[in-house]
Image (tube, rainbow, N blue to C red):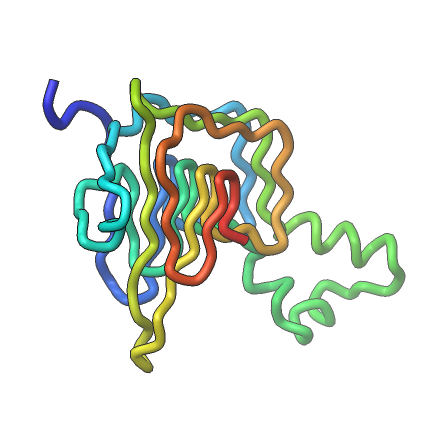
Length: 166
């Protein structure tokens, strides 16, 4: 049973990889599941030298999604003027429209667990990499009932977490 299960890799500078999506910006994902991420045998101490991770990217890597964030309309101050936002309740509605929502979603690995690696450099040769069992980076997103099962090793050059890198 060699090389059985899902494996995802993104190799470019600033890249994102996830079992479901590399990047989710201003989207809604409901009741979606990633099953059978490839088991990865990782030798302790040689984390960065190994290449057989189930999910691997230069900057953002997660079992379900590499990076989840808000869409560019909410990131730009002038974008809110275009939406004719007049009061706080309208502002919150506008932000809700463009934020990423992940609800009732799971990621699971094969027997022995899956592993995630975020390891790279940016265009200025600065070390980057945020990794998580579910999401590498979740910025301005809402995750409800999202679960990560059967992970083995999560490695990020900047940040790493069993559930989220940040």
